[in-house]
Picture (tube, rainbow, N blue to C red):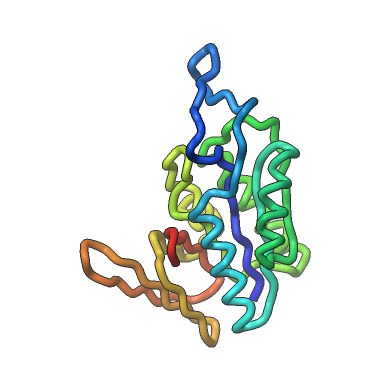
Length: 185
């Protein structure tokens, strides 16, 4: 089982948010950064899956060279491989972010090291965007489920569950697939 977890570098909560002079971006010069909480849960879930089924966990982030810190955090949790797709540090939108993740998945497939499962956080902790996982799945032609709080995998099949308005929904599908998870999975 080869799992790719996409993580996002976000400003640490609890600090004062300062906007740039033009009002178009967040001034991050004095901010600390962390891995988005949803993605941290995705890393932990991926590690638990590979402990049960075998395989490896890779983590990927888009960001400036300093984003390697969040990748090191994921490696410390137990991921085995880290991929930094280096940017100039500006915020990428969901379309461009999804395109880069898809390109990485296709590179691995062409090298005969295809991912079986892509895990992402359900939404970005800083911007609230929720589109990346769905866009990645659509571009790859893979099934996608969102808002997941439980994953079971056996014999190449996946059962994923989420809570919706007090009810539990269960989804069954094959691999490869894209799953977005909620904090607390």
